[in-house]
Structures are given as structure tokens and as C-alpha cells.
Image (cartoon, rainbow, N blue to C red; front, side):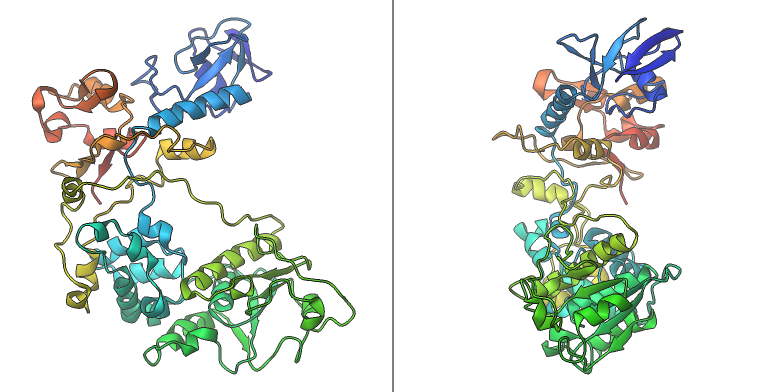
Length: 507
């Protein structure tokens, strides 16, 4: 057995072990992208696992460095982390793919657009509305009055017109929305008061009710809906969306005006949290809310919607200068997350963007590759009543492995800037489809060699290999074979271990 120290912690491992083995025995999470135990070892290429040994100025890959007696390893120092971050940013300099689709990033209501579209394309309308309701509570309304920034960002717009995302949302809501009642968590015993029954207040109420909290909404109008009632909507659309909230326990108290029928100081002792979701209250004088004994200004944190009054939160047009229905609905969800965190005794920070790499503008030929398999161009007018056909136009520009991509997870952990080493030139966007469902996107490949090693170990007749030299090296099939020729037996195994989603199943 060999004794060594990693980050000032002693550890003992069998002779022949690597530094990575020793670190993992201590529960240390040194990132790896090009290493696969029992298949690809001792041939580092990504350099994401570097460590400092015995104070040496050089950093070495932990996956291939053997332990020695008395070795002193530093794996979490600032310079080691900086080196790993630089190695990852170099990988992204030649990485071509959208982690998150542009339409998803543009949606202020936080609708899971690509997943919804794929469910609709498959005809699974009930599952689609369930997914929609996990993210927004007014699909019927937003399907008609949203400004549709998602369609402005749709990659297909640059080629022959955007996917009719708003139409899809609207028709899904009309088909299945009225019969969907979401499940709620067990009652928590916590009570929340929400002042304002517009898009933000009702959205916050919906998500807090789903979490098991009791919610009472106060508004100076007899019926809930706020500015949505002024929109040109078909009869029953707004009521159908609000009915979903009623069915899971909404308690509504209309014709109740803050500062006239009740005060904030009267609400606070009765509820575990209070949410202000009425317009034009940012930097409001506290006395205007009916708290005559107190003279102070309510200030609102941009970090978590919490105000300077303990237990009171504010959002929507309460803190925004203009009204946007989709953004107000999205604010309601974020408000609910912040309030739920407060009730659970934990802090929540809003505005933290998900990590994503992005594809630059594509050429006409590259668009044709991306659109391969999608429905041909149709106008929105031709698609009325055809949500499934409209959904089939989606070109699936989001990454199929976005939720379990090792490269993305590690990059997010290390604060990587995917454009740190971006140059004027890039590799061509390409999608290679294999009969049977496996696809290969060379632009996402980091040449880790794991799939090459898996194919060799499985004794594939052709397998995979590295083609080219230097910066032009890429993974391919020998003798100009097809992907199907190279992966006759172990395509699924290669997909399972690909760290970037370059190899994935068509789904």
C-alpha cells in the first residue's frame, strides 16, 4: 500500500494506483472527460483533471499519474482550478452546439419549449399540457397575447420561417388544458398572502399551492385576472386558465384594496409570507400601505425579490416599469421559488443563467443539415388547427444530451466562458445519422477517444479511429466507412459514455 496526501488529507491506496484513484477514494471530485475506467486509461487528452504534485511548477493529469510514497498532491488550489478552466475553454473554442435552444433562452415565462414541441409532434397532448403547466399557468392566454420572443429567436426563422410555437401552445391549451389538474405536495401548514391577482400574483399562487402551501389572494377587483382581462381574448379562455388554480385550492378575496380595506402590517402577523404583486409600488412609502406608525421606504432586492420588510416579497409590475404578460407570468414562478425558499429556511438567488454554448450563424447548407427530417416549410395560416404538424417543423437545435452532458456540467462548475478562445473560423456544422437511431455531431466531439477505445475493445469489424493530424484531427470510420459500418455492435455503449452528446440517440 502507498501512503500519500491530497489536499492535506492522508490516504492509502494499492501500489499502481493513480492520483485520480486516490482522490476518488477520498470522495474528491476531480473532473474527467477523456477517462473511462477499464476501457480508456493512461492516455489523457482533455487535461481537465490536472493536479500539482510535490509543489512542482508543472501540472500533471491525475488520471495517468501513478502514486508514489509520500506524494503531496494539490487538487483544489486557485492555480489548479484556473488551469482546468483554461483547458475547458480551449475545448469550447472548437465546440459547435447549442446546449439550450435559442427559443428556450428567449422565453420569459420559462416554458420548456423543445420538450413540449416534441411531445406535441408525437401526438402526446396530455403529456404536453402537463409539461406546460409545470412551467406556466396561463397557456391559453399567452398562446394568444404573448409577443412570442421565442419565435424571434427560432433558428428556423433565419432559413424559411420560425416554428409556430405560440400556435402550438395555444392549441395544446385548448385541447387539453381544461381537464388538467396538477398534483400538489402534502400540506406544509404554511400560509402565504398575495396582494394582486394579475399574471404575476396568480402565477405565484399556482406554484406555491403546488408546493403544499395555503394561499390567499387579495385584489381590489371583484374577479381575478388583472390586466389580462383587458386583452382581446375569446370567451372562457382566461377563466379556463384561472380555474386550474381554483381547483388546487386558491382562496380569492376580491374587492379588497391594500391601504383601504387592510394594511400590510395587518397581514404580516397572520401569514408566514406576504407577496406584493400590484403595479407601481417600487420604492413605495410604507405609509401608503396603511402602516401609519412606520415611516420608511420599501426596497426590493434584485437577487431574490425580498423587500426590506421582513417576510415580504414583491415582483411583476410592482418592480417593472412596463407590463409584459409572459414576463409577469415568469416573475410569478420566480417569486414562488423565492418565497418557498424563505419558508424552508434557505436562500434562493434568481437571475442565475444556465450555462450554454451557442452555434454561430449557420450557412444555407448547414441549415439544410439541421432541418433534415423536419417538416417542410408551412405558413402559420396553413397550420391553424394543426399543432402536431407545426411541431414537426422543429429542427431540434437544442442538445439531446443537455441534461447529462459532462462537458457542460464541468464547465458550469468551473465558471467557463465558452467564447474565451473563439476565433473567426470554426468547423462546419454537420449531423451524421445512422439507421437505427444513433446520430453523430462532429462539432460537439472533443476527440476524447472513448468511443474509439470502446469500439476497439468490442472488436468492431471497422470501429472508429482518429483521422487527420493536429488541429484537423477528428473521429471517423476507417476506409471512408459509414457510421453504421463502424458501430455495428456497440453504438448504444458509445452513446452512454460520450461526455459531450456528440453521439446520441435520435429521439
